[in-house]
Length: 206
Image (cartoon, rainbow, N blue to C red; front, side, top):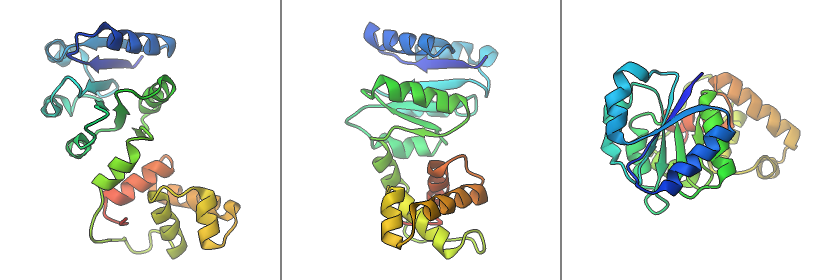
């Protein structure tokens, strides 16, 4: 069974109880540790099948340098300091949570990450997109059609399928087909992963 490690240096019991409740309810194995406790056990217990969630409301972002190769990494960001996203992206962080996000989103995010998907809290996504803006587009030849590139660019701007269909004078069924083709051609798990790949590779701009 995969283990979820929540690393926090907070003294508040509420924080620990929140994760204990969620993780126990989600039927996953978990441990809540301080940063020092985590470093003490990492060589004998941590592997790439684990999920490690770092509480950046109490741990410095430089802690990522200590553990990035050891497991799937997710972070809890302070509600008032989303600028940390830039630092997290440098270490291929897979999950982005907010300190006060709803329980349902937190539970969903944990399960998405355990299934090796990317998870970005809805309120974090606009800041994430802003962080990966690029000045020059470098689309690889023959990867997508012109229409597919346009759909992908509109997805990156957080347009819904309905909005894209209306803007491109196409049916929502056609847009859904385009999105499925984009996901398949990029080898992505879903539309969000496809958008993030394209932004990181500088294939599209905003």
